[in-house]
Length: 249
Ligand SMILES: Cc1cc2nc3c(=O)[nH]c(=O)nc-3n(C[C@H](O)[C@H](O)[C@H](O)COP(=O)(O)O)c2cc1C
Image 1: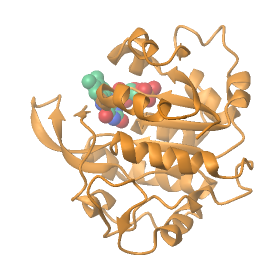
Image 2 (image 1 turned 90 degrees about the vertical axis):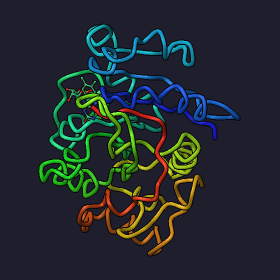
Image 3 (image 1 turned 90 degrees about the horizontal axis):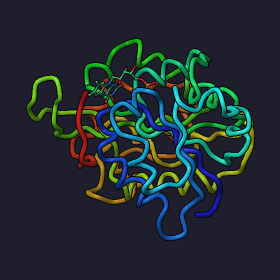
C-alpha cells in the first residue's frame, strides 16, 4: 500500500518487537516510512537500530529543536503510533504537546491510529479508559491490545500482558487505514476501520486483525469512534489472541 506513513514509537518494552513490525510494514510495496521516537523509546532501543530498517529516524530530545513538527505532520498521509504508551494516549487525549511526537500528533489534521501496549492493570485503569474513550470520541482509532503471555520486566517472569498484534495483523490494519479517504479529523468515521474487536470477540488465530468473530466489527468500530462504550475489561475479551513477541514494562 503506497502513501507516506509517519510512525510514532513510544517507550514500551514492546519496542523489542518493533523491527519485525517495521519489516512487515515496509515490505511488499509498503508505504514510505519516517519514524519519530520519544525519549523513552530512544532510551529502550537505540535509534540507530531502527535506522537499519528505516533511513529516516527522528528522536525527541535530539531532533526536536531542529525539526518542524508542523512539517512532519503535514508530510504524513497517515500517522500511526506503535507501540503507544499510556503516557502518549494521555498526552494526545489531553491535547498536550510536550515533545516532538506529541506535537506532531497535535499538528496532524487527520485521525491517528494507535496500537497501545502496556501492563494489563494500566490498560484497565479508569484514567486510561477515559483517555481511550476521549480519543475515540475525537475520531481517532485506538486498537484493542492483544492479551497474551509476555516477559514481565518488573517481576522477571512471564505474565499476561496487553501487547501488540502480530506484524501481519498490524500490516493489514495499517493498509486499511491508508486506504481510507484523507479527510480531516471529524470529517469521516476513521473508526469505520473494520478492525477493533467487539467485546466478547476472539481473534481468529494469526489472521489479519480484521478477522474477529463476534458482533459485526464495523458496527462496533463506528460506535467506538463516536465515543460509545469501550466495553468492560476489553482486554479479557480477546484472551485467545496470540500477541507479537514483546515485553511488559
Ligand atoms: C523497561 C520499561 C518498559 C516499559 N514498558 C511500558 C509499556 O509497555 N507501556 C507503557 O505504557 N509504559 C511503559 N513503560 C513506562 C514508559 O516508558 C513511561 O511511562 C514513559 O514516560 C513513556 O514515555 P513516552 O510515552 O514519551 O514514550 C516502560 C518503562 C520501562 C523502563
